[in-house]
Length: 107
Image (cartoon, rainbow, N blue to C red; front, side, top):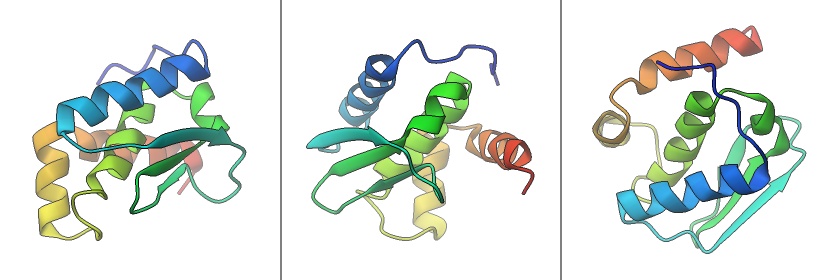
């Protein structure tokens, strides 16, 4: 996993959302960035994605994990086997990325 690249700016992060939504065939209607105290992102069933501004400080690979995780929720509402299958299909190293993100949080 390549972890050294950091996002250039919020538009760079939003561009990644549009790219991944096209690749995954899901519809994102809006992308917002804001300070989020307790989570990295959230997505509504109608496709409104809110990303934490803290993602701008993280390596792109970890931000992509968060983006793909949220977009998979447009396909599967829970974190069960089907969710994990979609994650593996789109990001084969998603578990490594998730672990790295949790390590940064000290979780």
